[in-house]
Length: 480
Image (cartoon, rainbow, N blue to C red; front, side, top):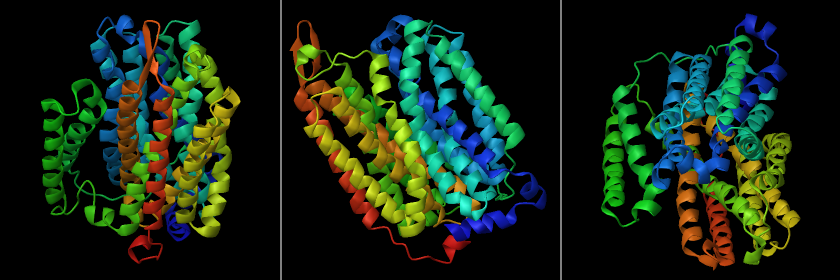
């Protein structure tokens, strides 16, 4: 990766070399990453109230969450390809403008349709994180690239961890529309900082955009992710769920056949099929799956009533504050991850991160008797996530040509999204079916949490196994 980063640095114009302040660039792009990832947890505190707030059913209101996930999954690889072709800074600014526009739409509306449209626009900004990673590779001196990428990768968890208590406090003490107005201000501030302080990368891949490839990938992803996220509501064996899965398989096969025959495909499947890229992406799905296990189960465990025998009766704000240190753990470990990757290679860092994730969930299985024990388990899991997430871009960028870094990072981010989406579906089914009655209310049983932790351990182990398969022999292609 360092050779490729040096390559990128050599391409930067002399003017940029004189004016670029590495620390400032890292701070700006990392701030963008935190704000974009914050959108994932922005509406979590008001989920129970959404049907009333939007005057709709609970099933329809769930699309406010699902729409953002789908939009992010579809647009992230497309944003990466557009960034490689037309300029990463330009596409990054476009993503942030869409975030601001979507936040405004949500802030001025109180009905379902505009809320979904606004959340789709917010989700379209998720491509900003892989774009930021690629800008760092192109612009920073070789010795700063590893630590910068580690910090940028950590923002995925930091934004979500910090967003929970912040959003909960705003929702509890102010009008719920203020959530979106805060997003407007943060998004606009990030866009302004990027406009004035982030240089445009000189590394481009001039080509015709593959519109048909983008359409095919979008249809295939939607057909895959919609039943994953809605299968629990529709029934996993229902005709709608099975039909969409079948459509996804057929469209993916047709899309792959089409892409390998294009001179300038949206996704270069030949590069993607390289063992280093392929096994890293598969490991990313497993790590993303394990990551969301913490995001979904730990807050519910902390907020469950004490009468359940295992819960602690915390409010959303209190639960968010209890889990907020996980974000700081990820950020603090980012330089450690960079140094470990530089010394031992990013493969070792990914393996170690996955092992730490598994250890964190094992601790959660044994330590469920107090809030501080849950906090310790969550911070261990977060530490593993920080190590693993920081290693993935390094592995990817060390295996693809410099002209395809944004697209390759976008695809890797997509793989993590597939993992988190699948985790949401699986964990949701477990928590919904292993329940206990408490008066007129139903809560997940203690065994349900044990099961989700065991599933997360298994996912982390799968991540270790695929990480072990990643070859680290440098090829001529990787250094292009």
